[in-house]
Amino acid sequence: MNETQLLTHLVNELSQQRKTYEFACSRGSAKDFAEYKSLCGVLQGLGIAIELINDLVKKLEHDDE
Image (cartoon, rainbow, N blue to C red; front, side):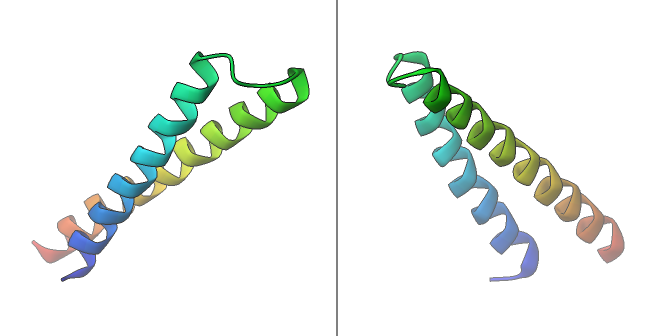
C-alpha cells in the first residue's frame, strides 16, 4: 500500500466517523448544549483533518507527475 492509498483509506475512516457524529447530532442525542457544542467541535475537527489529508494526497499525486 503506497502513501496515497494509505491516506485515502484514512480519509475514508475519518469520513465514516464524521457521518456517525453527524447522525448523532441530527438525532438530537446531545444531553445538553455543552455536549452539543462538543459534538460540533468534533465534527469541525474531523472536517479540518479530512481537508488537510485530501490536500496532502493532491500534493503527493502532483509530485509524482
